[in-house]
Image (cartoon, rainbow, N blue to C red; front, side, top):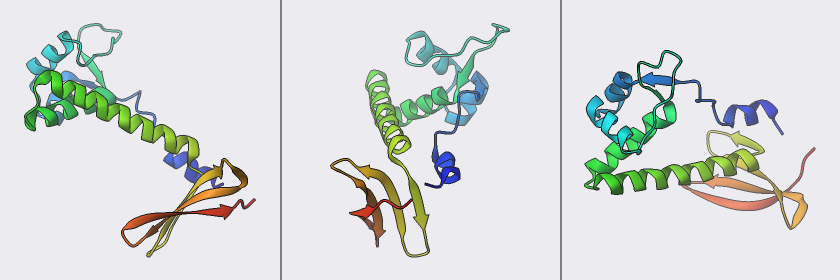
Length: 146
């Protein structure tokens, strides 16, 4: 297993990225008053900062604001947009968790890509390998290489 590659593909620590309300508004196209309203309703949350005067938002909250806005633009009500954004967030978190847990290696050439998804449970001396063939993925079992 290529530890450097595995580390590169792990979740990038975004917890330390914080933004002011103006930054979130500018990045998402949502007004500051709308952001404050969504926060009052409990749809998004700001972080408590030592100075206690300005709202600060996490990168994850910025993404949530962006998703809510996208669903509103698609015609959802605010409540529906929040639910859809939360569903999408949960879906993507499951995918991220899966790949963090299962990812072993990635090999990419000009023509193909291969992802080693780790040990195949019924047969621990084999790995599940995903191969990109043309525009679709195929799966095969491969021997564990040490």
